[in-house]
Amino acid sequence: MADTKKVLQMTFATREGGSLRISVDNTLDDLTVDQIKNTMDTIVESNVFYTKSGEVIDKAKARYVTQQIEELDIA
Image (cartoon, helix red, strand yellow):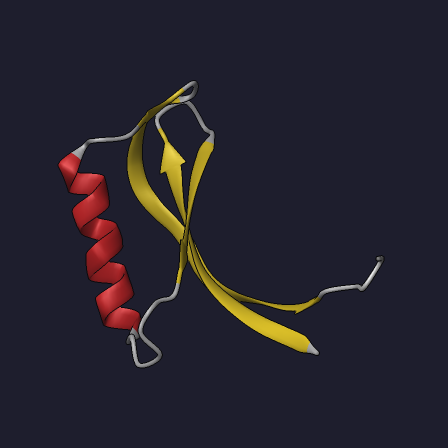
């Protein structure tokens, strides 16, 4: 039997042209685009992430990724 997994991926631009992706499992099903934008703005403004390509400076994109997971019986 296959399970379905839905993941919210938020991608941010960094100071030196790179990016940072944060993936969140088990989000609420009724999140609005505005709620996601506000969350991403809060992450940018908080300045808590620093990458090899510098600090996070802006939101780049957000998307839901849905995966179908099927376990195989290999015993």
